[in-house]
Length: 279
Image (tube, rainbow, N blue to C red):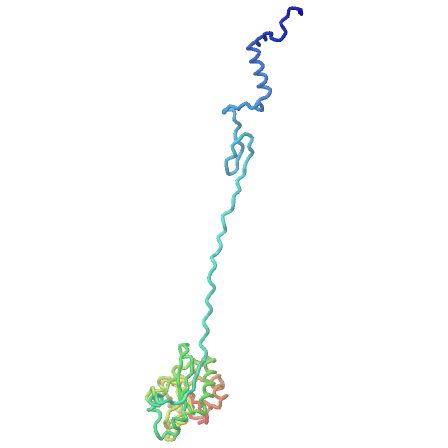
């Protein structure tokens, strides 16, 4: 088969492309595509980081500003205080009534003896709580006739509730059955087998039917005689602790249980004295 003598058939040798043209093509392509073509950006051309708030921005091109979440410091809470302990209950009134035991009879050797108008079997030992002059609650004791023992407990209950202070409530035997010594100690007492003051007959105390209350604050007064002598400061009946006044809680409490007050007598005035017979 014949041809025109050209060299365009298969197996012809390709012409080499000039080097300058290759470089021009590469330059044009690079400029057209830019970074999208996957060309690395030189380190010196990196974009400056964006603004940050509180913490550095995340590394990387085009990263936006970041914000660090802050939390206010915890508000201290007051430590819970323990609940206050309840106040203790104030002491309540207590009393007892019992017979004269052999041991108590031995203690009463000065205030009772054979020949007294009342046998020991007819007497009762009474204990009562009361307030003293310092405000403390203490227990005292008296001996009275059995017929009046329970009523006297109720009288002392009222005196306790009224907070009447009593300096001392002891058997007169603690003073050798000496009435003057018992009064000088401001002792509230009851039974004592003795004669009436200034006379020879039996006192109501010898029957266990009389009580003397705070003798210093409530003295026996006859003319210029004041017993005990320390009671002279209370002859004018001041409004002081332990002083008994006409119509007060003490007089009313005794009256409710059949006891009369010696302060109502015209003469002598026996402000300490209460009895069931009015004598």
